Length: 500
Image (cartoon, rainbow, N blue to C red; front, side, top):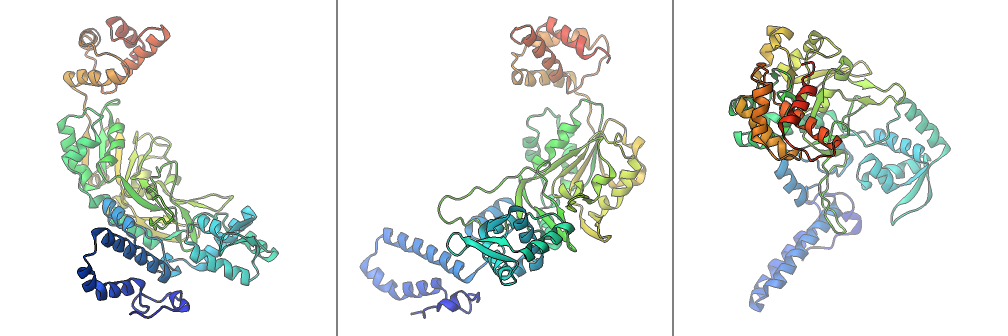
């Protein structure tokens, strides 16, 4: 039989090879009794019970000796999404953080809230309680905090001492941030490499699924496919109203649905906030029911839908650099960093508040090398991944906006042309039920014969939707059911094309 594990050894943090595990003891016992079990013809129900007991003992042994092996739920999720999955750190070395950095976050949090339990502090900084508990105990020894009272078993209510408040104020003067503990830059770079768009190769079926709510002819899809697979930049150009922005916004759907990003990263002591609820859509893992949650995910990371960030005429050079809030000293990541492993759409390219030359000179090297350099507030320049598909959408001709050197770095230029008459009719047929109409082919014939052919008016993909919205609003005002009639089309055209 395996020897009993002394309590002081079981909690000393030794590796499994040093301490006989409960799983090993159970396995040895099972091996010794296997012959007797066969003779007794143990039923399948008892065997199933033994298997469940084995799993429970294995779980208990992992918790006792601090094994950092990802649980089954984590492994399954990693297989479903990508090879990357952030596993909860089991020690300070795994966090790649200096304990003093986390100490500052804990003290600033206690300064802001007055008092908190150890579990609340750990939840705030997104680190395991067993790591934060030791840090708080050291702060108690250093007389920076004191026990205000007891909480749940093994936990206390912590409050800063006068000396602790003074130190916390100095920390806040340097940087007011006291949220999630940051992730190291090296860990972030590894995560981008594991979740890169260049690792995925969408097929024609993936593109049809991504654009199933748009009417795109096969020629455009066949040109989009190689461009998307390249993971490089592309131009979408053509007349306004043909769906360039709609196409760009749906490209992300052709890739894997989710990625993991850190809430913040740290570079040479500077904390940079990366997770942005405005541009990122959080998609947390489903929580298991029961007392024990085996989704041991590193809470410093957040699972989001693969990002699609769209910027237009409001884009300025400051949005492409690390910005610092002057009052809080908190750094904000630039747009290209927030869009890593996703899509960055520069809409209405050529109409930004910054000149096209200024923008293109900023990105001419990153587009080719796939890495960027950022200037930190302390004056240091660091290299970061530049790993997104950049889509330039414009109503202007690309050759009128940029020079040949830049066009060479954007290998795909796709002209989004006007729809044919048949496609124009199909758009009406598609949009009518969505907007509450019953499709009327005769009314569309009237519209084309009276308002398009005589004037040589070009078809645009947006016009069926826009004209039907004009009719619907008119019918609502008249308290009538929405109908596609010649008279209603005359009213809609008079409004829509008044100065066009």
